[in-house]
Amino acid sequence: MTHDKGISHLPVHEQDIKTQAQLEQISSDIKANQALTSNTFPINELSFLFEKNINFQKGCNYLATKYESYKCVRGDGNCYYRAFLYSLCQKLYLEKGDELQRVLTYVKSSIDTVEAFGYDRFAVEAFHEEMVDLLGAVASAQSFEVIHQMLNEENATSDYCVWYLRVITAAYMKADADRFIHFLDDPNYFDVETFCQREIDPMGRETTMVGVLALAEAFNVTVEIEYLDGREMVDEKLVKHSFGSEGSALTLIMLYRPGHYDILYN
Image (cartoon, rainbow, N blue to C red):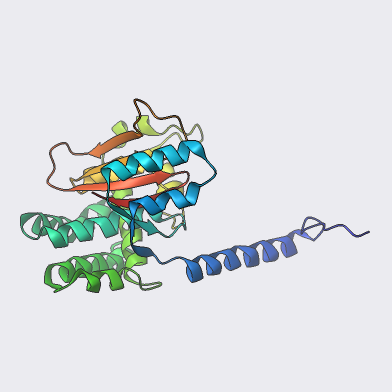
């Protein structure tokens, strides 16, 4: 009788090669089966994902009383930033006017801020320009389908802008480090600079609540998150938290399920 020893019996360098190959295969499978941001699904279809879990089913039923639909975002560790980007662009497209101009002005000037907090201007310039161009496209597009297609092109606009959102988030935290240090609940981090280098800057790192807060404040928007995490509901409602600026003109609504974020529509 033979036993599968996995890769643990291999020399370390061969383990690394095989592990990397497995990660690349997982990444390839995700790309093949998940759009960066999906088309819109009726909210009642969400329950199909949790048919065997009563608490999740109850949560899905509750969401169906408040929201009409949702979009799935690719689960690659960048889902929160990608959901924020897509939802922001969609809101700005639908509500063209002062808010679009305000956000565009902010993003144009943001390169000076990120440079001031340690990012090489030459290194981030292409990502900054991609974000500016995307907002320009939002302003001129005759149909949001144009933007949807832009944000679903592999290794292109969405990824460039997601990384630039990470840079904006980190720079915003560094600009107010004495405040944000108190939001770091990981005992491995004692300063905002190190936290940003390891948790915010790298693509594929899932966001934390401090990242959600910082990005919302940086863009002066409100982010509401419904937590579909399997916990018992309180007063027959899911837990919902709001982040960012109170009274802001733009509100983005996200759905959290364990380790992942999607977009909600009411």
